[in-house]
Amino acid sequence: MSDTSGNDPFAFFRQFFKPMEGMQPFMPPLTEEECARKIAELRTVEQWLSMQVGMLQMTIRTLELQQASLAALKPREKPPAGEA
Image 1 (tube, rainbow, N blue to C red):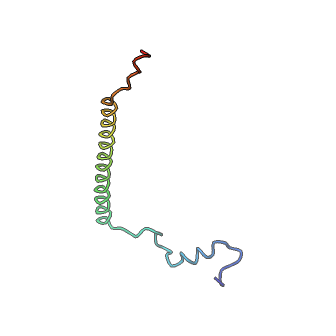
Image 2: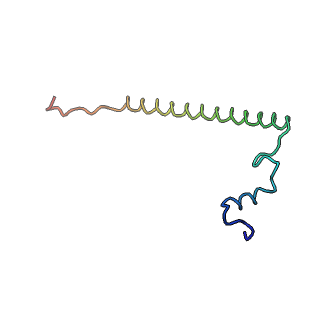
Image 3: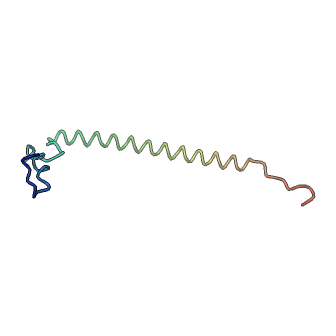
């Protein structure tokens, strides 16, 4: 830290990323085969997540139907005999 300039607030970050000059930061270089493999993996994950969302929606609908059925079968409160 002693060799960083006091006038440049980003000197520390430039020094940190200096070894990576010429490379894409945070993204390793990929070959065409690696790209195709990653796309296939991500599509598999996407399909799995879609299936899980479908199962969750079906569970919610089932519980809503069960709730409606229980509400329909619930005995209604009868008014006292003298008020009707």
